[in-house]
Length: 439
Image 1 (spheres, rainbow, N blue to C red):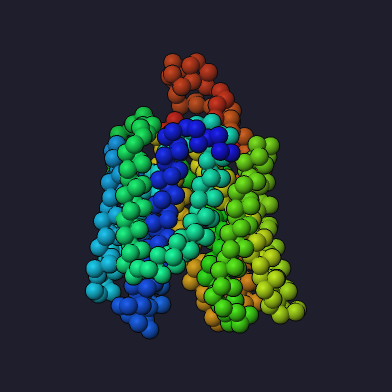
Image 2 (cartoon, rainbow, N blue to C red):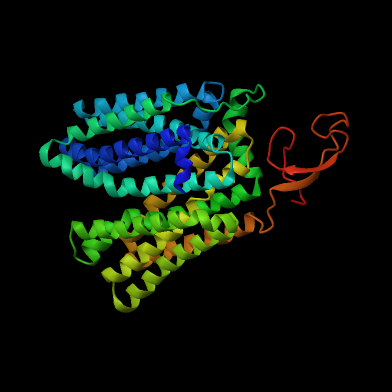
């Protein structure tokens, strides 16, 4: 897997991702402490609003930002967005009112919503070979998992000697280092797309997405991931502290089991995806998430909640979580032309976070109103339903190259070269506005 680090451009981009993630992790810890300083007993409400702002920014800003950035120099856009994020993090320690936090978080998350899809769409241009890109996706998944483990530990070490304001300076350093690493490489620039209106550019990624069967399936898989993931991320602390009566360290252990499962899958997937297609791997991942949720619900109902059962369930869900998420970049790459990739990646970013926007509050409400068995059962049912929808939307026969016709093009058109029916890797674009029925 690590041989792709010999590619200098990718190596610098991966390090940029890691340091930016570490900075974001430090900011998450610092925001909790800042909210407590500003709001005291209402800190939970402040943080809930912050996370809601984050999700709304992700859902609404990503497609618009991709459209605005389409004709801009990709490296300059990424660097500018990193510097905006660093500037916001620099301002957070000096705020004195809750509304100021909300405004700054909106700017920060809007910049992140613009940055992430453009950054993700750049990687397949840097590593065009599918096997190398698959390994890059696994390393990216590992980076996210390691951040979730290392950032809290680093924050704890810094807080021994410094105030929480120092954590925001770590965030500034992370974004600044990311910008420097992006500046240090030359990024591929896809050929410019045809001139389009702003509305057309804003909605292009969404339209390509919903016209492509495998991407409609990916959206259903995204719902499965968010349903299972929300149960873990929202309710672990309640299950451990209220359900088991254990302390903070047990919460960390439970989250560590989920992260360990995700890392285990990320390490195993590159070789697996060399011999298997994406659809069956993602189906197995979704089934594992369903089994983890329903298995814990059955155990809890029959024998009562236990730490060992919780850890086993979270490990299983973590494996399934990564097995579904890791191949998603391959589907987006396969389903778009290079010039359309930022728009399609932005569509996935917005739509997947719309799923989280629904499941985050749902998981919390189910746990509060119905208890753990109800929450686990409903989340498992939602995950299972999303899996069935994915299987319906994404046909099992899904070739990359599809035979199709262009009866509307003249024989001399360079795309058909005298033959209306031909075969090539099929994606939705100006010459292929709809998916072939036979495909």
